[in-house]
Image (cartoon, rainbow, N blue to C red; front, side, top):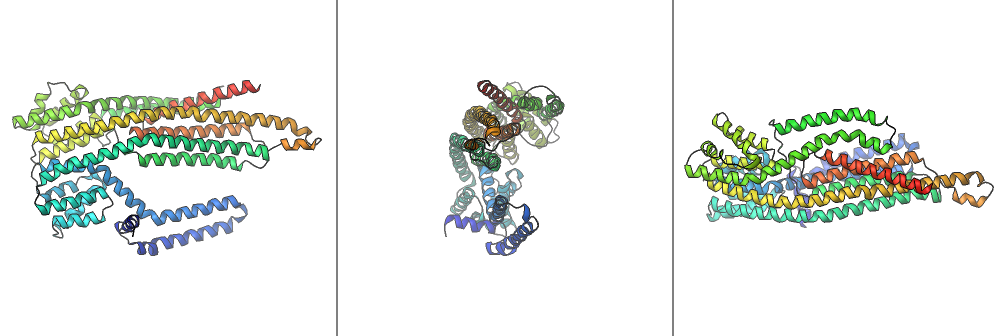
Length: 553
């Protein structure tokens, strides 16, 4: 049995239902229900079912059946990716906790309760349950979970850990070595994914070019050879499918991460974003009604209607720049904090009191607020979580948790802060490469607005010219039979204009979403790119229409 087949079969075991059982209890009943529904539709709606609709309906039936069949495998692969996503932070936390000489059993209990690791926490929980409830020794429990986990990276780690325990290697030594190895592996995968962004951009533009060619051919063929415009409408639908497919491919290929912190703690940044969003949406509702009353081109009406959304988008863009700036000062802050706390032998609050007199750029205010909260001695964990939330940085929040957990169980603050600072700087270096690739992608996406809009509107005016020509020939085509060759099927130019600009709008939404994925930015920031891209497309469309109109006249 090949590796892929082995993974395929493991997926059903991971879902709690072996493959034969899944086929008998899930797939066959659902497939039979789909077949019955298919024939019921054919019987009652048969008169409306053209060959094309039957084909599309049959394809949909086949697609749904296939998804049902491989659904456990999809979930299995997704779980593996979620585990791999958190492995570098998990191993870093393991290394930090091992500095406190916590027992391995307690270590796995602590790690299994950390819900931020999602699927990874579930796998670690399995090990703890095997050890605590079933009295399985750690090496054997690790091997049992390694055999069934959907992540090859976690599987290899657990097998190495089992060997280390059996050979008597200390938890601290093993964790420190694994921490470096995990971060190096993460860096290799991250760099490969970032380098592939350029290739993904080329694939995206090539796919769009092919879809544009099909739209052009589908628009002109009915005029030259007769027939209806079904193929033209299908080519536009195909363009939408290509756009969505390209976006999904980029989404699964680019490493997932986020710049913004997403806890439920209220912060000035989150409140500001909500207020700007409320203002932008409110103004958009007003401009939506006003714009379509103005005597301006349809494209400008659409662009003007959504222009107020640039307000929250611009605010989010500005806040994201501040967040990235704060991240630059965090490694020096946490290193200074750990060194001070370790050197004085006192708790973090005393060390923070001394650090208040030093400047850490935009982090200084947040450090002062952190000290004030810790000095009240109400809730240490909440104070640190609020500090991370107010910086707005997801990365700072995660590494804060590492420091608090490590020092709380008795770890050396200096060693912990050095590990955190070193790993934080490595991740920042990786992110810089990603943001550089994102800026290149941004330029390509903005350029694609012109690249797509201009040929579409040239096509529209070519069709308009042929419409006019056919309209002039039609009255005399009966007298001169050979002229019937030049009287193809005509299409409403106004309808075509609406369809083509709708296509431009869909491309804009997908392009803005692609930029969001590549740059790991927030959903609100997308609105800025969306509005600007719509205006680029609208201006290009109106200029193209004006130029073509002047040429034809």
